[in-house]
Image (cartoon, rainbow, N blue to C red; front, side, top):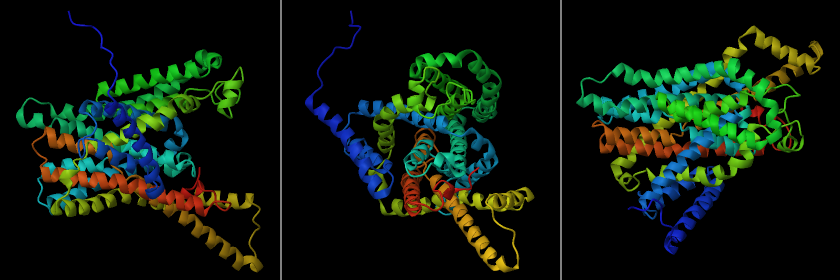
Length: 499
């Protein structure tokens, strides 16, 4: 009779040293690359390449698969934290701008891919679409990691540009997962005639739209009133324990619904965070309305917020274990040795630059939006009211020249902020990361359309864009935080006009 247990044995010293060195170098590489490139994820991806299959293959294959699964849980936690910290009011205010930006971020990469790959390099039309679809994705995990790393100097998540970035990245991720579902079944279409193409394409689209619409409606009219009336006041008795139980149940429910209905599990994680943020009462006497985590833990009638509970119990494991495993698992999936031939290098670099431009162009909508907003009469009236509230006197002949000079200086500063917001948004949309690799690997391994050369060209662009985007954002945030240290214009306002 077979033993129904796993025999316990002491791991070998070599195995222990490999594990210890792997996690040590993950932390060291993050620190070094953060100092040099202002993007710690670059070092973690490099460690994954070295320790994984692409280069030295030091880790055993089953370890790499385990770390990949744990890393994906880390990705879910990163996005869940982003949902918990998202400002719902800014998400609603900037939804139209986010939709326009996300549409641009999907259409431009695919369109420019046809221009270069199909017309220039001679790749097939379906192959070009698959590669372009991979490069149309925006890495949600990297986006939230960039926002988190910037938060020490700039509260990026509380700005309009941060809100637009999060919304556009989420929309791009959903579109990318829809295309992933379609691409994954293209092999079936080539061998079968009874595949329902309409349902194949429509299912993830319908599921995503349904979750996006139903979640706020059901939350506002069903769950929030029920929670505030019957549940909320009991949470103060148990503080973090009740919070962590509810957070686990809600996150598990949302990612399960998303997974079984055919949409993105990551989208479900983001909605779970937003759902929890909306539940508690916003009244000053509400148990979740506290100035700090310590107040929620100390006062008998108060409770720490969900983000406080996340910071106390989950932020440490996420930051030092799950997140490094996620970015190292991206390194596991990069065919590093196959990248280095002359033709593959120059094609990959050219395609990288084109794809970086295709995402950076998303930022142009911010100055366009600003021009449209300034043309509205209500906007001009609001500016005049602000001037009166600040005690600015009415203009007369003696002050006319000085008044005009001050107005011009204020206008220049305002436009500087707008263009900085545009550069920041475009740069933060550049990284492709896990979704891009997933799409192109499925297209290469599970369909007959993507050739080895097309696969390598796409991987070059995904890898370099995932490095370029965070580096530019990190340098931009660091430069302007240092520039505004000690006074002047607030650093948060520097990246967009605050609501």
